[in-house]
Length: 121
Image (tube, rainbow, N blue to C red; front, side, top):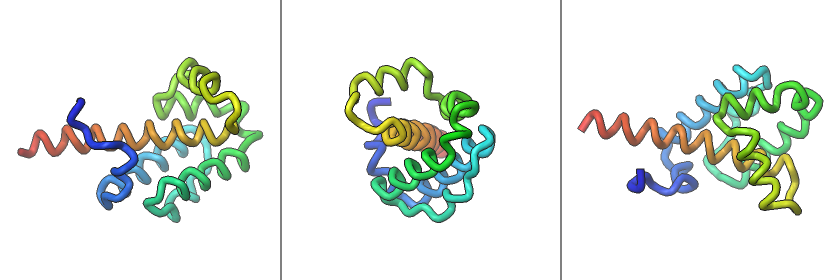
């Protein structure tokens, strides 16, 4: 796994970015969150982060009941979230949550892509 490329740089690959958006839509929809914002995303980490923070804040009331469902679906444990929140105590909760979501979804896509390409060689 040490040969996997840098996660953040993968947003520039059209195939990976399209797969990232598909995975994000799937994860959000299966957690009962609106995912209509995903199609308009551009392959820019800062813009994706801003939009995701905005959507998480907009759906804050829904977050109470579905946030752990969303995080579990994406494969982020409550312990991971709490550790991250404790490490970055002065940052916004939704900003940190968005960062974790982006990194994990992109990581899943890159790993799938890496092993899929390895099998076809």
